Length: 306
Ligand code: NCD
Image (tube, helix red, strand yellow):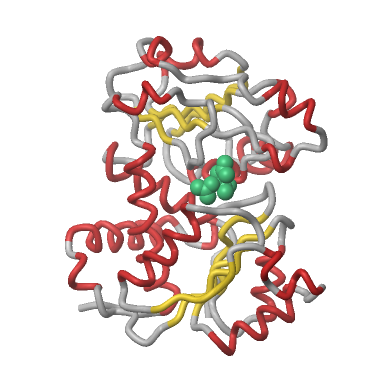
């Protein structure tokens, strides 16, 4: 049995296979409509979510399966003090596969140790978000045609943004990837990403504060929201929240082929006027999230469709 905790749980070859499957699902949805008949997905979300939870549920329903779960810790037995390890033992009796989001780093990993069904990390605190990474990789590969030879700007809250940590970890395995890490000083990537991931893999990266300076050189700009829920005080959040706002004037500085991605939800960091720009790919990205999760569910359940 296999779980998904980090994007590195899949080799580059396995990711290739998974993305090919996702693209086939996109092209031939009918072929997969009964692949998970009789299967149940549990979504255990101890933290808010729109896209991740609903796209998991949509993915399972589109495969013919069914879903159960909870959307907040308050309406689960966590509110009574039940541990994650007990909850997953019980959910293992009710479902065939489980996606878990939790505010504590490592909670889905603990669950996987007590589970008899595959557990997917759907976001653990400020740590990792591997299924967003599958979504991001699939979007980049589908729209850019490659995952190598790219200059990628990551902008915003690089400290607490788990999607950023997972995406960097996944992308360092491809050839000739360059990162421009754009953030206020206080929100730079954690040391383990800088040292154990970027430096350890000899990846070319630069840390800068100004978005305008980076924009003309990027193949891809990955914007992120300042992660309000991970701040210790409101004052710091208020000071940081509108540090970057991507608007039409800034888009004019960028390459005509530069893609803009964002895991969403957006707050103010991308002005709505950018939505009309053909380079804005964040809504398409959310659509790719469904195909990526369909492919993941099939892969972890070991279901092959002829
Ligand atoms: C992200 C997350 O939860 O980390 N959202 C998502 O899953 N698409 C990004 C965010 O909340 O800012």
